[in-house]
Length: 225
Ligand code: HEM
Ligand code: HEM
Image (cartoon, rainbow, N blue to C red):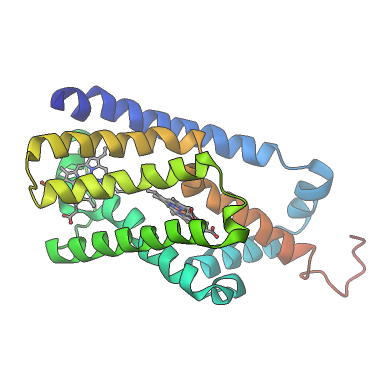
């Protein structure tokens, strides 16, 4: 089981995730309306790129947008979870040893203490995000089973990773379940709302270009939008 999880299933999951997302990116941009969107973006590339960059980085800064400032608790929970969801898979020492062995390269590594703190903060953040969906009527009404599925999928690698890390009971079992849950996340990315891991950049870029050019950027000019 361990050999299968760390061998073929790992390569398959990675290939499905990356291949699927290349396809989703292609569909995203070719799916934009030619008249409404792409024509203005092509006419004013520099204004568009400036708007795209601005929209992406502002949303990645805690409290960088009005949206984040209007919901301070949500913003704290969001960043507590997402710092872990991005940094732990990429920079955990254990992950990089695995990466080096399987793909021949590794990334900078977090110290053990930092990794523990970031992981626990991620779990705490995720709990608040779950509570938010249960408690706030305006969010609950938009929540369906798929949203719970995405939250559960995101929780499992953290829970099983920590159970393995603290060697609670059978280490081998938790490690196998952990690797399986990590691979389920990779497999689910192209097919679920987890596609936002990549498509966040596409939709923020598109909206940023929209605001940079049409809705604001060319205000007061004779452009007829
Ligand atoms: C193919 C996917 C993955 C593999 C092969 C993998 C492998 C590992 C290994 C070998 C460990 C070390 C366990 C130990 O301490 O002995 C670990 C720990 C951990 N992993 Fe993963 N992992 C994967 C995906 C993920 C993902 C997607 C996440 C989170 C989104 C994640 C979160 C964690 C956490 C939170 C720990 C414990 C961190 C700590 O030391 O405090 N892993 N993983
Ligand atoms: C570059 C990477 C990522 C970016 C930019 C990003 C961005 C976002 C954004 C903007 C939201 C919506 C927040 C809102 O409701 O207003 C969100 C939600 C969410 N993200 Fe990510 N994300 C990233 C990576 C990840 C990863 C790796 C995971 C899972 C391991 C993840 C799991 C989630 C979950 C579960 C939610 C929904 C939270 C809820 O139900 O309220 N994200 N993300």
